[in-house]
Length: 75
Ligand SMILES: [Zn+2]
Image (cartoon, rainbow, N blue to C red; front, top):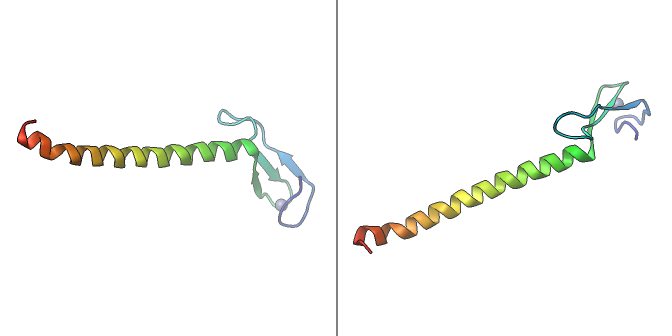
């Protein structure tokens, strides 16, 4: 594991937090942070959940619109 900025090997692993056992790494020379694999998974899940929620809302809205004329008729 090396710093992406200038190849320094003074990279320290960040301690595990409540969200992820592998939150990432920090460069002790320039202070830049690198994401660990755990965080990438967390971000991926968060993005999937967001997209899923938006899709679900769109689906529910389309169902609601489709049922509207039927309710007006009373069927
Ligand atoms: Zn660095």
